[in-house]
Amino acid sequence: MCFLLYSNPRFMVLALLAIYSAGCLVYSQNLEINSPNGLPSIILGKKLSGLMIAFAFAMICQFLIWRTLSKHALRFTISEMIKENITYLTKLQIYAESKFSRCEVKSTEDEDQIEKDLKTREKAIQSLINLAEPLIQYSKVESFLFKDFNSERYTQIMRANQAISDQNFMARKMIQKNQNKFFSNLKGLLESSKHERIESFEKLKISLYLSASALNSKLPLPQQAERILQPNRNFDRIIKNLNDNLTILVDFSKEIDFINDAGLNSFWLYLSVIHDNSKQVKIINDSFKFFGSWEDQTKETN
Image (cartoon, rainbow, N blue to C red; front, side, top):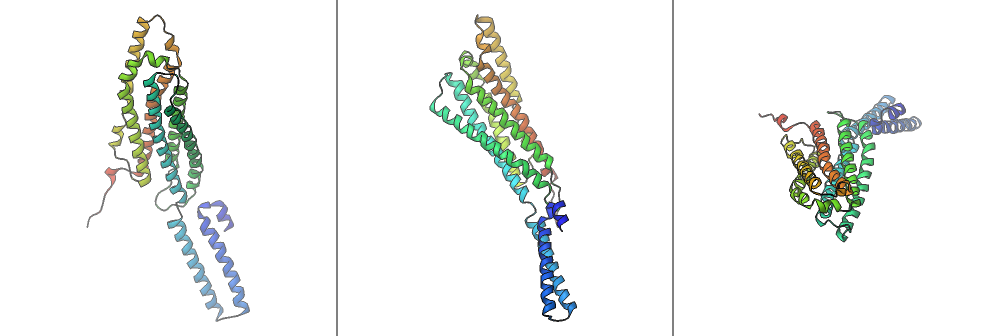
């Protein structure tokens, strides 16, 4: 039993209960020898019956009740991770659009408060990622009856959330450091592309919300969910407008120092975050295919 305990941690409860039952059997048998009560065969039968009941109880608890503690904790942790990323995207969108619209160097009190909240959520997301890594390893050794644990899928979801968090962090740092010179020069472009930026962020948040809901309910995502996440056309439209406006400004302006300004890098990185996050969200959606598909769901009729 000690070998079973160290070699197969998934049977920890079964091994411990077996050792406990064996100890009880030896102790009770010693008592029966000192104070006999019935034939030895009857006594042995009673003890073996009690031992079998103990084994059956341990197997029921191990395979039906306690078998997926790590898996439940892992699903909850990853869903919380996705929830934090949704909230972070919402706050980042408000923070960035406020910077773009005001075109001022000094931050307002609301912007400082949002920035403080973003920093707090960055730490919370990273702590959830650090918590999910050992949970994936624990879930590998838990017992299973019907389906093997797909650790690769959960690892992909975790890494995609890590990539989203890292990209959002870089975007926040760049927007925080800019001097808004570029924003004031291209205020028309910022206003004209505002609808596309907001629409792209809304699609990202809706797609992440569907992923978190599917994870909590252990239900597959519908195939139509992939159509929601199509911000590439908006991104291409923004890039085309940006290129046209930069060309006009270079042709008609003698001073083009604003092109090398940090604001350009901030805005470009902000657009890249929208585009790259859509790729990571698509990876998350594809990873939920291990739950199956609605088209494969069948129900027997009498």
